[in-house]
Image (cartoon, rainbow, N blue to C red):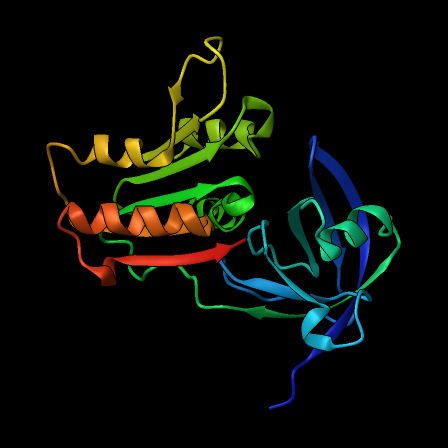
Amino acid sequence: MLEQWYNGYVTRIVQETPNTRRFWIKIPEKDCFDFKPGQFVTLDLPIHEKKNKRWRSYSIASPPNDTNEIELVIVLLQGGAGTTYLFNEVKVGSMLVLKGPLGVFLLPQPLDKELFLICTGTGIAPFRAMTHHIHTHGIPHQPIHLIYGCRQQCDLLYADEMWQLQNQMPDFKYWPTLSQEDDSWPRHKGYVHLIYEEILASNRPPATFYLCGWKEMISEAKERILALGYDRHDIHQESYG
């Protein structure tokens, strides 16, 4: 089956943190860009002659909403050809060539186990889509823990949304933790691993773990989760970097 590529147009760009931007992309060829929360798109950027060196994949940060517009959240990587192009060359109105949706990093069906969504940096993107989808559609679920690691408070993405979801959504808990923040930060400090280990210290409920972020975090999390007595089939991952 031939891959379907589309022309997308950037409709909005927001500088969300010092090194992160949100890009809204409309795909006019589709009345509705149909995808499942957790999936990604691949961009074909004019940065190299070889196609496999032009492709960059990003999780869709917006939940499905029956429109032909999606949101991506992208961090600028020093020396990264793809993000350098996106940050320096792409403006509102720019065209981007993309394919998708792709990927099987999808919510379990049904949500009958405790769910741990563990992420760092822009790894929150698929989990933002997932949690909004669950809330909007009133999907029954067991407790959900979104454990989000960043360096400093200024690096947190979608924080106001996550606090609002915690207030509105039964059995949803938002756990931001910062590794390089000073004493003015009143919440958890350190890495994400301390949070889920603390939650599971005295109880081991049936649980599913979704990991998204830097490879080093994912590798360590897998080891620690297995050490807690869970099976490798309980762990799903989407890594980058």
